Amino acid sequence: MRIATTIFLTDHSVPAVRLARELEERGFDGLYLPEHTHIPVARGTPAPMGGPLPPEYGRTLDPFVGLSAAAAVTHRLRLGTGVALVAQHDPIVLAKQVASLDFLSGGRFTLGVGFGWNVEEAADHGVDWPRRRELVRERMALMRALWAPEPTAYKGASCRVEASHAWPKPVSGGRPRILCGGAGGPVLFAHIAEYADGWMPIGGGGLAESVPRLRRVWEDAGRDPEALQVVPYAVRPNAGKLAYYRDQGMDEVVLQLPSAGTADVLRTLDDYARHL
Image 1 (tube, rainbow, N blue to C red):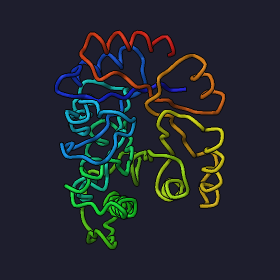
Image 2 (spheres, rainbow, N blue to C red):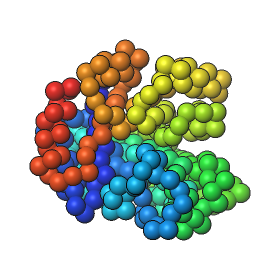
Image 3 (cartoon, rainbow, N blue to C red):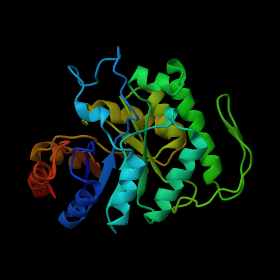
Image 4 (tube, rainbow, N blue to C red):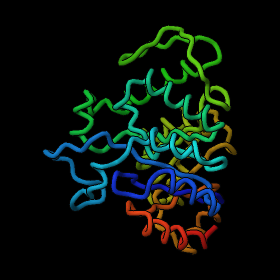
């Protein structure tokens, strides 16, 4: 089972380049970065973990910039968003960013897709909150059109693109690896079955009940039963928990690092390294 990591990289945390080098040297498999463009001060949306929102949410580096820095100083480390808030992006620009990062990293990029939780943040991007999942679905379809081998047009209710010349293409052909984050349910599982390679459940709890439901939706959509990936995300590890994931057939797990300075993060990496 591959062991990757995630962290809120900020202007106060361990630098991206130092972290990427330390991860690769220690044998970790990957680095995933979350996304928040900004956190409005006047916010009625409760924090997803309850209580006050940690300050790193408002200081988060752009994940594509951070991952590009990591790609430049590593050769094996996989790189991903955990997660990119697709509804908040121009999909034509995002398709170019994703394809460029995948190309420059030699095909090491995973696009983790999210739908967001912060209503006020999304509103500043012009996102119609009740329609955000459908916005993501259409924008993913547009990006797939731009990644296609031949010029391909797409027209949706919220976005469109004419048949276009658009290079580079994702290295693996067609699209990069795509994982959807979020709480399990019929809408999310339909998205995964339509355009993704798997699911990134936060914390990884309740998989024994939810994964069989996802598998039914996946197989009903005609997807290869052996191809579905489930990647527990932002996990606080212990030996029993990781053994459980292995027993459940998980190929990868993503461990949460503290959003902290270099010394604290390196101590955590040394602790996590015993699970490699």
